[in-house]
Image (cartoon, rainbow, N blue to C red):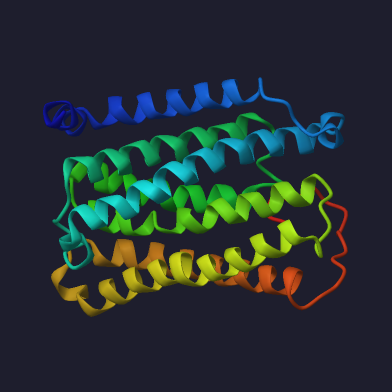
Length: 251
């Protein structure tokens, strides 16, 4: 097993390509599953449901995987530049392939304009993850960054519940929104701010620290904006009015 994981590290581009192909296969297989009738006759909702379904698979996989990697090798929390295991490296490779697949799906699906915020997010992730995969530096940082996928599970479920018309005061939506806000603060903002703090404190000791700090600050801004939208939509307003455009990141 270890020998196979080492081969992944020796051929990073091929490994990323294989990951992208694998997620494309997952996307194709998920199309065979039954979908809510309410989305069948709306091309935008149908595409969005398929995209969210693949994203949910990625979040369930990588969120759990990232936590396991840190439990397996806790040193990664303190040595984000150099510490990692073959399994952690594989995780970052697999996730890089997913983000490339998803960015391609948004662009070639014809929804780049509606999903420009996701595309910007994916570009930031891809260029930092590619650096980690190609240089074997900051792999631990990428693993910690993938803690956000724990929260993504509930973010995706939230959007899917809204698409199927589940009422905001229903028990299932209420439970999900509470777990969602808790994991947003703990896993998403917590992981993101920890990595930002680490880079700032160790700025003079880290290679290409400016490169990563700029990326982290942009991500921080985006996450705080999303957090504000989430609070406004689920906790501080009773009715959310759509502005008429097809926006992927909705309230």
